[in-house]
Length: 502
Image 1 (cartoon, rainbow, N blue to C red):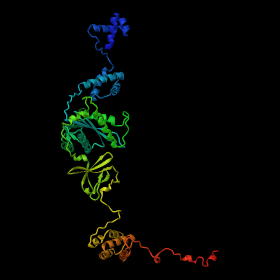
Image 2 (cartoon, one colour; image 1 turned 120 degrees about the vertical axis):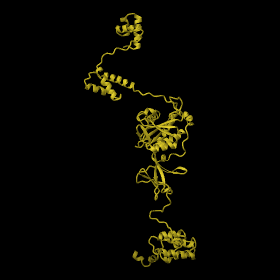
Image 3 (cartoon, one colour; image 1 turned 90 degrees about the vertical axis):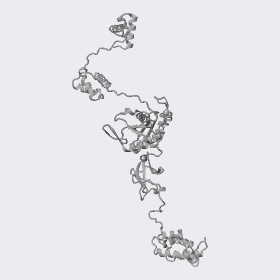
Image 4 (cartoon, rainbow, N blue to C red; image 1 turned 180 degrees about the horizontal axis):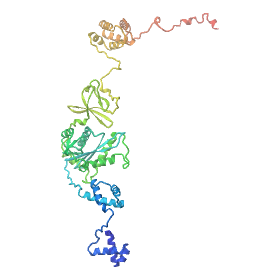
């Protein structure tokens, strides 16, 4: 069968020559073909009708082909059909089988093709979100959260480390705050964070999702299972984000060194796609969002408590919080209280919810088990070492001694290392303070502690020495008490010893 252009060329050649054979030579076809074209034009048909179908080797097997297509719901491959037909004695070629399978699939889908009513979105009415696989950062798998507003076509992409309920709700909260308000409906898939199960085709909502929706003032809606067409906007957002953000050979994008780099790349991607005109509206989504932001109702100032992470209790003895097999310190004033911990990239954020709202109390780089992350500012002042002890006077005599001053405290600390009759000497020091003065006794106690003099009478001797020495003066040992070697032995040189030296 000739095409329309070829038929017009044949008729043009016949009009020039008036001969069937000459027109066939000019048009490059047989003269019988020229005769059929001329007859078709005379009958009012510029192009001949459908060709007559000749018998084919696949005709006896047509019912079997339709059966296989129907059993597979139109998904069976032509190669599989051909192998099954050959096993039953089919003599035809594989090309003939493919054409027959294509016709059978077209007939199968003609009566089952789904029709869609064009959606007309209303500002502030619908929003959608979906998930996609993100790039690996430092060997850790990530995910992409795609959020899409139906009217303005505004897209947002956030990187995630998991799809747990606190993480998902936190991503929705961030997206709603960036959008400037809360829409009426939020459409998503039947994730376990939203739908627990289906009973008689009715989705049973997750209680946490219901509480989150009530907190934000929106209605969570889910599409039918295995029905991605109903939320194509969010799926397109994820598909475009994966094409631009995930490192592939198509975009030649380098890998990400940290989770912060991936966050920055997602922010840049959102700026680019929202700044260029959309194909459907011919307007930038960012400009349309400014109009749509006046329609939704505002989001509550205080975020949903689950968004802040997992509930953890601070240790009552040591102000440490256990999170993901690691330990992190918080202020010792929070000992025994409840805090929340969440993972943000390579960091762990610890938050306390008080009457004034959530307050971030600590932020650390994620640590490993057995290596707690500590901040010295979270703990009170501690002794210099684990064996150091500070004085805590209890009895009246102990209080009187420690009130003498720092010298008394130093003396007690040093004397505790094996000195006998410590309490008797402390009583003696208090008695001496009444006659010599508290300042002098405290200075003498400090000097005795420094010199290591803790015997009986050493404190009194130190007081006497202080009283006989001018303030600020230097005590020098006399010649009779010096330990230096004398020069008397040198006097014997030259007196009779000179001859021996010769």
